Picture (cartoon, rainbow, N blue to C red):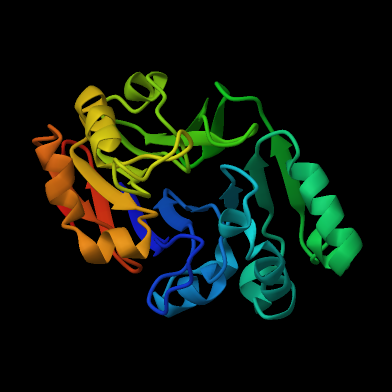
Length: 264
């Protein structure tokens, strides 16, 4: 089973009820955080998630709304996690440049970034990589047209899988990359007439979903004026997606089991 919880579903625009990008998965003893935008640590605590027992942190790219809470997370793990953290390694997986990011944060803020009192391993991989995380969980990555280093993530546990676009513009290869995932968490930043080449819009999300065929499409990273001014799932359906679709909110939880999704 994969347990998914939306921790931060907002954008770079601050909102009182939405943190910036962060998503939590729990599978077979692995507790995985995808991105770590501002508000992540408070969001993990607010929703009763075991932040002090994180085993893996996977980063999609280095924009502040996806990595801005890294110092706070590591500071909390060092000083506030207590016995739950003792001896527990944190593996950070990200694009090339992840180790340099941590080194620069350490130079600015202190050695706790790279030496918080427990083992921290940083693993960089090129897009297209595949890695076993443990607990029957496998991570795959795919390059996206957002920044030089940005990538989408797919996590498989046996016959069930979660896909996360991160931030991306249109990329035909993502359709096969996300093929048949149980849950596709897709950014849908702006409307079709506002969007540039480095983000998705309702018609672009619909095209991606039609090619991938997820059991459930969850929309995230929607700018507030779009979410408040439009029925975004209706726009995606009008663009040709006939499957299940919803807007994710902070704290929304979804469980995936073999051949069935138990809860939305």
